[in-house]
Length: 317
Ligand SMILES: NC(=O)c1ccc[n+]([C@@H]2O[C@H](COP(=O)([O-])OP(=O)(O)OC[C@H]3O[C@@H](n4cnc5c(N)ncnc54)[C@H](OP(=O)(O)O)[C@@H]3O)[C@@H](O)[C@H]2O)c1
Image (cartoon, rainbow, N blue to C red):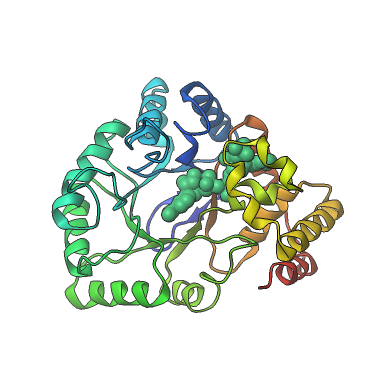
């Protein structure tokens, strides 16, 4: 499978990243191993997780996703060298002191993530959410981790253009490592936060972009057409918000473009992201092998300019 380089890093990834928030949430360990096996068997090589996945599940405390990935890596000798692991720090783990982007917490959190992953290094370490720690302190902590070999590259998630611009400027002025990858929310339905200044800044500065909620939590697969369909997934209750006029137009455009290419809406939605200037790779999760097979079709689907224009128009706010 053709690989794309993550911005100015020397890390190459296949064009879809596995979203690991499902491990220990909507799928158990056995199914997680199965979909991860399918994912790498098809030639994909990168997995996104976070220390906080999946704190929102009753009885969980965070770290469940990293632990499942670590057990999978251990059970598959040689796999660690073949895959690229992204994880994140900064979300609230609901334990005093365990949140944010302070130097103290980052230096502790990285060791906890490495232990759960059973790994000596994290390929890409993200700041999960902006907070009020000075960029100089956070980037200084990452400098220490890069020099120690605990992380290979750094990125940020959920920053707006002003925040990313400031972080890049501080890195330059203080000769600290700069964020090389951005992880924004971006999909056919959620466009406003990324399109425009943020996307332009990433392209100008050579910052790679890996998008999250690439399938709008499954809405863009087209399997939810009315409120009666929401019971199909544990996360169905979060989908109802997409049932508005724009959501309906987007599904109609996905159906029309899908019919032209004999392919499914999920595949078209991911191919639309892959066609966007500045997007390196969408992150998407899967709960079954069939979803991973859709990722393969999406990675191979070439949309025409007319297809992209029709989808763009349907998703306009
Ligand atoms: N940086 C951040 O702040 C942040 C925030 C959120 C997420 N993320 C990252 O982004 C990743 C992706 O987000 P997400 O997993 O929440 O949502 P998503 O990728 O938009 O939606 C994926 C879900 O849609 C369903 N699905 C996938 N392919 C399908 C297909 N072909 N047909 C039908 N249904 C399909 C599956 O759920 P069901 O089978 O349950 O329907 C799957 O779990 C996360 O795993 C995480 O790594 C990052």
